[in-house]
Amino acid sequence: MIGEALGELRRLLTHRTWSGTGRVVVVTGGAGGIGSVLCHRLAGRGASVVVVDRDGERAAAVAAGLPGPGRHAALDGDLTDPARIEAVLAEVERRAGRIDVLVNNTGMTSAERFGERSLASIDREIAVNTLSPLHVTRLALPLLRRSSDPRVVTTVSLAGIFPQAETPIYCASKFGLRGAMLSIALDLHAEGIRVGSVLPSATDTPMLRREAVEGGNALQFQSGPPQRAEDVVDAVLSLLDRPRLEVYPKPAESRLVRLAMAVPNLLPTLMPFFAGKGEDGQRAYLEDLLRRGEVVRDGGGWALAR
Image (cartoon, rainbow, N blue to C red; front, side, top):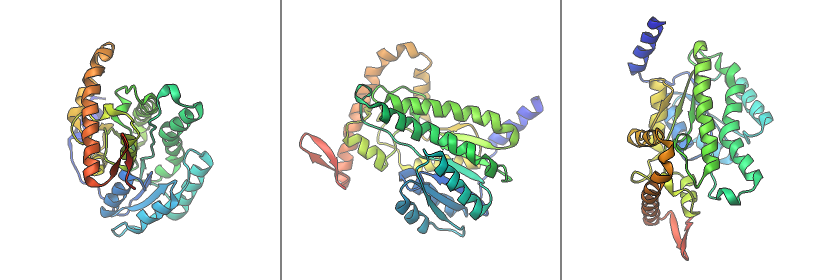
C-alpha cells in the first residue's frame, strides 16, 4: 500500500505534456464560451474532437473551424434526454470506436431568486448541471474502457464549494456534481480511468454576461475581473498533463472560500463582506462590458448589445 501511495505521489509530481495525436475527445457543451476554446486547444494538440451541443448549428461551425490533423465532428442533442445521450454515444462509437477523453462541460444558471422560481425550472437546472454529466459519464464508460488511457474531466464551479444565496439551485447542482465526481474518481481509479474536475469562478463567457445584465449572482465577482475562458481551458489541459482530482484556475480564490467553509457557522457574519466585494466587482464588470460594446444601458439597468 505504501509503495502504491509513493507511486501515485510521483505521478502527481511529474509533469508531462499530454499529446492528443490519435486520441478521440468528446466535449459536451462544446459550442459554448469555454467549450469552443477548449475544442480548438485540443484539436491543436492533435486530437480528433467531437463537439456535442444542443445548438447543432453552432456545434457544426466550431467543428468546421478546428485546426490540426484530427478528424473532427459535430453532434447535436439535449443531453438531459438519456435516449439522446445513447444516440450521441452510438454515433461516436460508429465513427471512432472509443473515447479517450470525455469532457463534461454542459451547464446553465438562472437569475431568478429561489422564492420566485417554478418547480419545473428547478428540475431543469438540476438536470442540466448534475444529472446530465452523470448520465453521460455512466453511459460513456464502455467506450472509455476501450481506451489505453481513459480520462474524464468535468467543469464544476467554486459554487460547488461555497454557498451563494442568490443562486441556491446552481449551488445545489454543483455541490452534488463535485461530490459525485470525487466519488466516481475513487471508484474508477482501480480501472485506470482518471477522473478530475475543474472548479472555476466567474468566467467571461456569454452565460456570465447574460447573468450580469439580468441581475444575477454578484457574489461571484470577488477578486478582480472575471477570468477568461482560456484560463479555464488551461486548467483542463493541466489535468490532462498531470491527472489529479481537482484543479482551480484561481488558486488564491479557492483557498479563501475553502478557508471560509472551515467555519460554516460564521457564514452569516462573513456574507456581507463577500457580498459587498461582489457587488463592486459586478459593477466594474458591467462597465467593462459597456466599454467593449457587449452591453448597453437600458433605462436604469443593462441589456446585451447583441
